[in-house]
Image 1 (cartoon, rainbow, N blue to C red):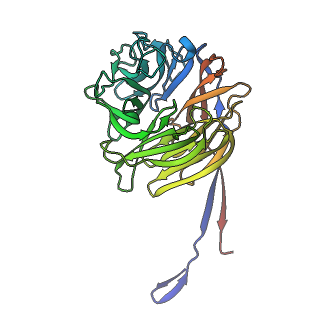
Image 2: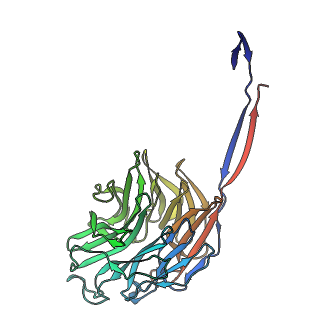
Image 3: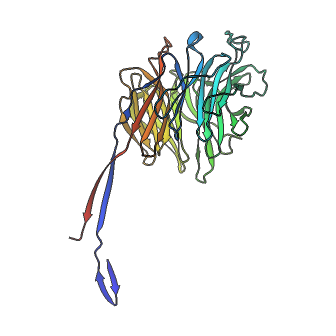
Length: 424
């Protein structure tokens, strides 16, 4: 460029150095799986990002294989599997549940679907079984699981109401320091998606707050998440899959709330699918800036729906046919673990450039593995740590299998090259 000095124009050359940084994806390193139980069914996994502890919720196989005794197993940051903690002292029988841990207060909260009547008495006059009503019981520990509170049933409007409440899912909104429990309620008023708040200060449970009425629900969880909008207001999300009145079509549905759950938006139908099973055909990942839904229509490619501050965007990933999917979100990426019946695949969506990367074609080959919970965290050295709880050898016909914890890690690798430009 030219610069005038004391009335004389002088020419000055500027040397520009252009440096490009190319990142390529290294395969994730998957360690030998850790056995949690030689015989059981996994219910949920929570991977605490700061302590790097894994909390695995699972149950044994009880009568008719539909319920059993619930246990919580902790795996610490040294990959030591601790002794299982029994969580159903009254032996009500556990169907499903969820767990969450808060490292700042040593608090662990567990929500279990148990039978209210201890298998005695009909839940309503239309049912032929006598197992009793299913309801959700919550217990907690404030000393890393050494001792536990007595299980407390989520309050009903009328404790004498017949009906079921099941499939709890726990959400911790860090920005609000609030703990929400989402679930399905089925009684004489119909079926609906609801939530209750676990108040961290008093350890008390609020009564049910309805979110939306539904036609019919499968046995999967109502999954909650949160994000912020363009003015940094917190948005709660509730996502589930339901069926049509004739039972032939399924839908992925979402509602949102901008006032901490006091009121919810009308239902948004994300997509529809042909009814095939009642498995986890969708998963959510969330952070302050993004809310993502990954789903499969059963034996189809995975579709990812991302809601950014500037608006939603959806795209389908050609990653092969998937039966179920699990997901988690951290470091600006949505990490996806999909079950293709014979093996697991791992990949991620870079939420910044909105692109999918396939990393591992076979996470745990040659065995049938169903992973229903996926967690991730990034350590101080930049390593991505992945955790998944899986049912190995679990088949619906036999209801036999073992529970394992899958462990993976991955570091981004960079290759740098530069080119200098000069006037010559």
